[in-house]
Image 1 (cartoon, rainbow, N blue to C red):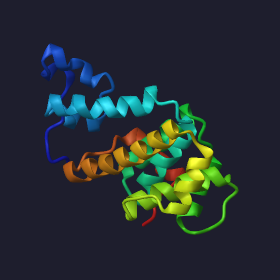
Image 2 (image 1 turned 120 degrees about the vertical axis):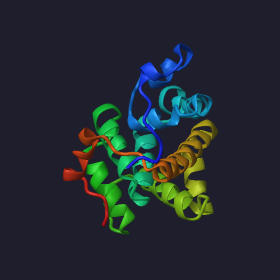
Image 3 (image 1 turned 30 degrees about the vertical axis):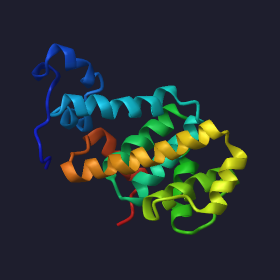
Length: 183
């Protein structure tokens, strides 16, 4: 049960209605602070719409954060977005589960390094030196910074979701039938 009220677009000042162009529950809670929601959306919007980092790699990193933290909301939203819009395959999602459980997958070295980097940033706050070197050799400096910003941002997002106890929308929960989170 959400800790704060969900706000609908008609409850906002005209100047803030753009904040609910996508009226998902996360945004409907964040608009309890329109200024905070706008600031949150600035970085989130850059990551999703302006960064030139490969969108599949971005989504795999986000899905990894959601999976590792058992954030049902984040995981299911990005499983759906990743598979429907950004080139993440069902095999990729199964591989995220395998890689998290220290099992082999058929992912490339870059893919597995991105997943390890996400796990390291969740659990150890930073990417280890060996993986950072692999990423630096595979990505431009711009893309490496964007990857780090993406992982860091979504580490924050899962904490916002958990603390505010934001409810997952039922149509996103459907992803759990095919791609369950760990118990």
